[in-house]
Length: 86
Image (cartoon, rainbow, N blue to C red; front, top):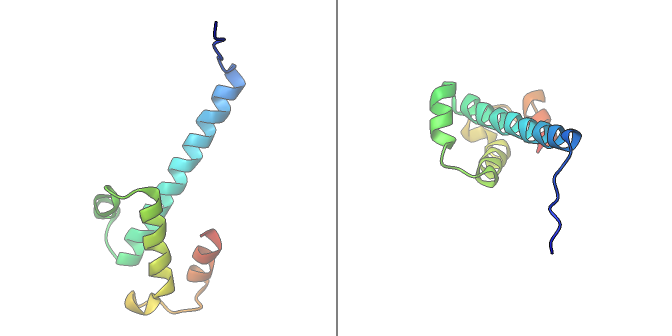
């Protein structure tokens, strides 16, 4: 006979907080991509809606590694901070 594991309230709250923070982080990545492309948030979400997290992360990494394509100065504090986040 198998034993059913039911998480307690604190474990459920903890898992909910993790999921919430991850969603906020992924939303932040979408906002940054939209900002770098100089499009509004709505169109940025449309642009990234079919992408997995890995695809969004990789796109952002490429955008940071090739800032001359985006007309963003290399060495700017903005790009440095994004690099640290990645």
